[in-house]
Length: 550
Figure (cartoon, one colour):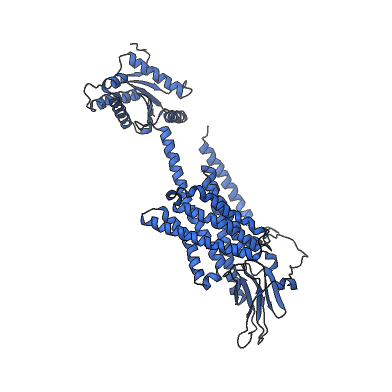
């Protein structure tokens, strides 16, 4: 009868043969199968968006890009407007204009994905400026950036920014799935909470970057972008600060904060509901207040982290690392940095992504700790506390595995059931401490006499089980006789006056009639009692024809 390995090898061989035979057919050109055409012809016209007077009336902020001193060169000029967090953008030159919204990609020139842009070709020598208009920003400093240049580099720059924004969201999604897998394997609510944090981050970043409207709106943010942004700020900022507080270990130093801080965080998150009816001025004030509170909280976390770092607390490093990008942005805001103004969306997204990555690192450490605790608990459940040997529960599993292996390989398996003679008298005469020393010495002696220490099991009290895989008959008996002698020698080395340690051992070898481990153990146990009745301090084979009676 063929083994499983031989069958698998045969099947693999046939599969390889079929692949080899089919390769020439695959390589031969087939009529109509050398290419793939998808989609279908359409009569739908490209979407046109007209800049209506009502739309233009809202565009209160304007900038004019003047022509060079000698007039336009006649070369194409690409205009791309970034960091439009809400509302419309209008770019105009001559009879060419475009109006678009960041949160609805259908309204924009498809050549520009991270901003609202267009390509114009001013006539050579023309001095008419290119005009750009937008709605008033929600917060000071959150102003648009206009880039002008040759179409190819401007479009490549636009694509690069889109890749950064998309990558940050993709990382957050991947981290969320990782946390969900951790939750399913550990049932630890911290992992589920982190997955929710990543989900909120994905939605917030999508609205911030305009990807909520790409390739078409999948969040109802169009026209309500400001409210969505402030709502996510009300939810995200308190949650980020709460996680930072946990990372830095603030709850351990001020346990009382663990009582009220979650409720305070939930209350701040509830402010997101107020964005549904607040006027624009109220939204602006709320957004500024949330930013100020977030920066203040970051400063507190950073200061506590530095103080803990001086005391060589390892968890402080992660907290400091998570808060540094946000503090750097706050410092650049105070310095009115043009770099931050130009790349504000990417800076915010990268800071959030860095925070999520650091948190994932800490979460991974927690997962390792949970696994170690699980392994320790499993070891405690399977280990005898006094001797360090596997206990009865673990020993029976080990015996069953040896029995399966022996039947699979047609190999021998013997077990020795050992009982320390007159152990109660040892406890009564020499004390329980001496009895414990005897048990430890016997355990050490038996483990030293076998190849694998896991094959020596303390069954309970003064009873031990020795597993001898691959051994049977006279060889097994000789091994157990040697162990019996070594046990007596170990008792003598304890140097306790009047102490004599002997053991009675029952030997049983696996036979076809042993349906389970209980059957094999029963025969070994009966053989051990025969040794007791025969005068103790001896090995009795369960298969011996003569039943020794005391």
